[in-house]
Image (cartoon, rainbow, N blue to C red; front, top):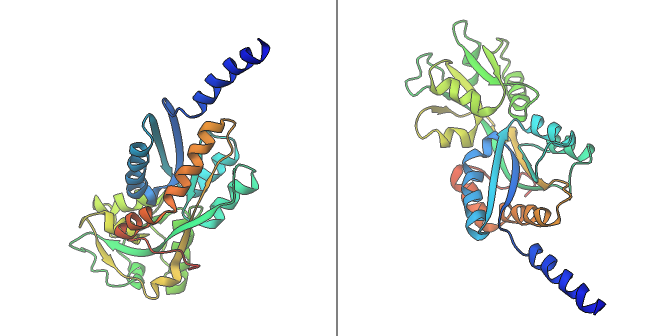
Length: 250
């Protein structure tokens, strides 16, 4: 009778472990991944009936710091390795981070290019208002390198929280130019024009993804599966179409 009672208790628990109904998977991700991860989240939900993927986008650095501080989340995807290391140093990762795509910085202007910007050095013009990410974000750190290499001394009109905020300022005509990722220029659908940077490959960055520590074994398994999807050949096609490249290390 004791053995039978134990079996009765175990079977429902095992069944619960295989049931995804009502599960929410929270993914913290760099703002430049908005379009691609939204697409992949829909794919994941189709493959996992009953699972909802909640996407939280923002600055990689901010999200990594929040993860290290214990903010709720199951997966972290960053636009550089340095941000991911912040989460790793905070003992927030459930597995080693892995690279899955690359991106590079580019210069965008409104379609009519009212300031007549033809190169990054034109940002030094006295009447040019350009915007960048805050230098604590990966896109901002890359922008600092671009501007330093080009000898641009003029300060930006503003430093935005993430790359989507920079793009929005240019799209809305509030800035003459902005330094964003190439994928953001592609995603704008013609709302901006691109002014390629010299030696653009020098400003490439790898993106990293890792599951976060969680006490929920079922959600932890889902996090691992989401990471696997993002690194799959299926996802590579999504990233390539959006303008991402393979990892820099490849």
